[in-house]
Length: 301
Image 1 (tube, rainbow, N blue to C red):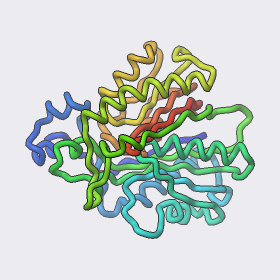
Image 2 (cartoon, helix red, strand yellow):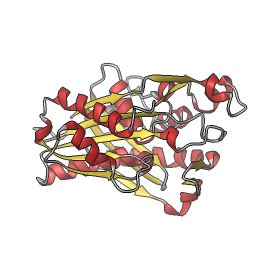
Image 3 (cartoon, rainbow, N blue to C red):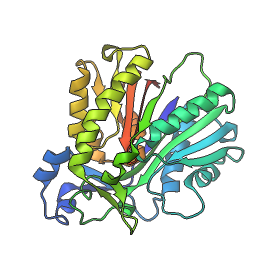
Image 4 (cartoon, rainbow, N blue to C red):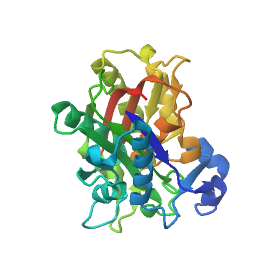
C-alpha cells in the first residue's frame, strides 16, 4: 500500500475565518485545535485534487494506471447530479480499464472504501485498487455559520491497494446510527449543518469503542501500535480517544487538523501521508454524518 496527498495552494488562517463569524483565533484554537486550513481555488476541483493524489500514490507504488482494476472515491461534497467523481478521476489517471464508483459514507468514507478495496483484492475481483478521499468542503458550508465555517478545509488523499505477501489491512469494524442523522445533515439549500455539542458527545463515545473493537479484531493491543490516525474532525476528540485507548508515548497520534482543518473523507489519507517517518501498525478510525463509523488496523507503507 502506498499513500499520497494533495493540499490546495491557498492557506487560510483563523483570522480570516473568524472575521466572518464574529469570533477570534483564540476561540477557534480552543474549540477545535485548528490554526489554519486549505481552501481550493476554482481550478482545484474534486477531480483534479483526487487525480493528483492518486497519481502520486501510483507512482510511489510503481503501478501503471492501466493495471488498475478499480477506482473508489470517497466524498461527501460532490455537487454533480449525474456523473460521479470516480470515473473522471480514472479517466484523468489513464486507468481506462478500471471500474469506478463513488462511495458515500461522509467522513467515514475513507475506511469504508479501504475495506471495500481490501475485499475486492482478497476475493480476486480486482488486482490493484486506487482509493481516494477528496473533498471541497468549502462548497457545502456557509462561511457565516458559527457552527461549521471554522472547521472545514479542502484537499485529497489516496492509497493504492494490491496483492501482498503479508496481510497489511486488518478486519474492518463498522456501523451506523441513522436514528441520530439529524445532528449532521444538509439543509434544503444543500449546505451542511451540524449540532456541534451533540456530534462531539457522540464521537467521543463511539471512537474509543470502535477503535478498541478494531484492535481486538486485528488481534492487537494499543501497545502494539506505531500510530493512531483518526478522522481529523476536532483535536479535542482525538485527545479524548487517545486517552481512552491509553496510548503510550511511542505511538504517533495524527494531528494534521491543526494546519489542514477537517477535510472530510480526505482527512485520514492526508494525515497518513503527513506522519513523519512512521512505519508499522496504524489504527484508522473514521466517523461522521449518517451517523457512520468504521475502523481498521493497517500497516503503514
